[in-house]
Length: 423
Ligand code: SR1
Ligand code: MG
Image 1 (cartoon, rainbow, N blue to C red):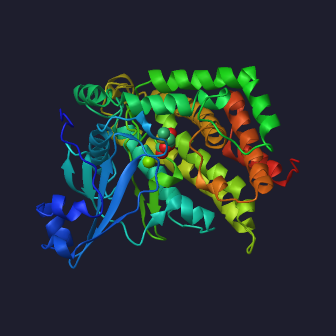
Image 2: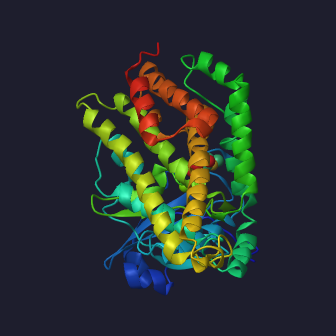
């Protein structure tokens, strides 16, 4: 295990000298590091990200910092997250080929991953804020979810391998701790780093924090998150972790990877599309976003349908793990038993996925880490109106998740909230 004793953060000036001898970079960017141009472009909450360009091509150099970039060095964070990100990327590449950037080099001691520069891709969240209707994302993301989550679980993986992997990722404690606090607890009390649009949301925030059913639901979801090591999760699967063009979709940044409940990645992703839906009225100054709103609700339906269908396909073709063994069902001529078990597994994912979506919507509005969908709405009254609708839907999903039967039902409620006047 790396000691990180010699860790030094890169900067655009030091990078060519420090990494100039690496074949992985010289081959892709150019053999003379003096010809490289380097820009730091990291706008996430945690890491440094450099684009390195030269006569031959380009690459991304990503380096973890020993603290949370968003907050500063008062919040230390282990460099080892880079190790988890690297190992998650290699597994995702094997489980859904072509969906993550190609890795060129990994330096554990310096917490550096050198990888493919995706261009002209942009962050999906930005594309949605701009009102771009991307035709491929729903299919690509639904397939990615099903393939990575099914193939990383005891439904499919050899159990010795899965248990070894579970042990490997079990040490990603600090990043799990961020999620456990920031998603499931902080939004529901007056935690130190919380912020919200004030004073517009003050009343609603007080109501939500006094809502016993909601607090119990959020803690039950935290319990499931922390104590259900079902599969290797991406762990931070929001629209800022996806890069797109009209024809390509790639998933990035799995540094929060760990063994958790299948429903978590699915719920977090869908929540981000509902938040995008409610944020559209904050971005429609010049162009109306009716069609964009309809598009987003359809994306949610298509992601879930694709996920479910691909999960079922893998259930029939790759169910080689220790769970719901063929010997008990198909091999006994009991195909209906296998179908019944599949329905049960999908039903549990459905219910928990809705809950995870609900709390993710809350934490992006009430907690520390907000999202650009709402944050870039400058007028605070307008922003608060959008946020309130998302908060209401989030509460419904978290509390009533066991009684919700379809996405159509949820989308109808979202449409009703969208037309309602909130203040
Ligand atoms: C302190 S880190 C805040 C958030 O940024 C990451 O992208 C995760 O979503 C985390 O919760
Ligand atoms: Mg990230």
